[in-house]
Length: 338
Image (cartoon, rainbow, N blue to C red; front, side, top):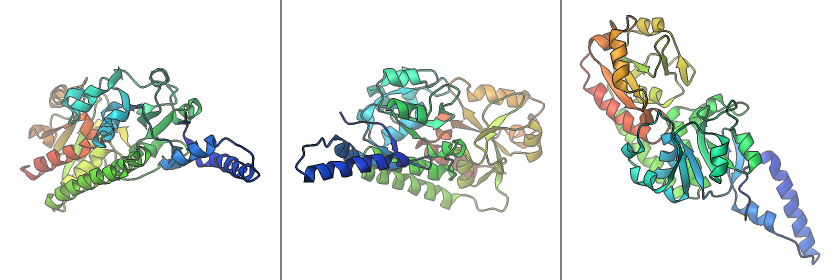
């Protein structure tokens, strides 16, 4: 069986030396094993948060959350997915455009990702984000999985916080990059190019129709929190959704992903629209009720005008459904009476 261990470039010199030795011995008439050469030939080098890693095509992938699974399913890879881990925040998979694909694979857990789950599943690839799936605190990191011979793939959008190999790209560019990288790993490059081309075309169509104004509508994304709110900085998909649709994220100046702010900062920004991230276990209706009653928010323009837009959880985390959320929000912005 060929090894499925990811091979960072710093370790590839050893493979090269082994191959050279095999060639030398073969020239001298000796019979040698070509396993190392065969394994090297099946590997494809792909970036993992800025680090070049050599992957073998997976056959038992495990996905964490809807965004990861959606990326794999959008590339037609259901037969290469063994199962998924879906925490309570994720809405029911039956609501997914790829519900039929979810039905073909195993639900491994409805809790957070951990090492035991992927080892028991005999996974040969784990797809997740840094601090969203992979975690030092919970003992499941790419480095740990490397040592176990389990390949790992991290969402580009989450690499912004990855120690040692940070990357910073716009969230939509991160989405395109993920699909292209997964296409290389699974050897479905043409399919990936087609999917990315379609997503880019849809984004361009939205951008062309967006209101052109020097005063874009100010939008506050409300993720969660009562004492202090969690919101979207510039490094997560809702920032691109808001901007492309013709709005302005009131916290686009924060060079962060999901982050905590103060109610005072929200009040000062006077948002005209509040985008609610709708969790499976924290429904949007409850959040809207809170905003209408809270002294911090009940007098905001968005609340007084009942300007709430509900963004599905899987439209807000990195995945192909980002573009579904973009199209819906763009329609909302174009129809908004300011």
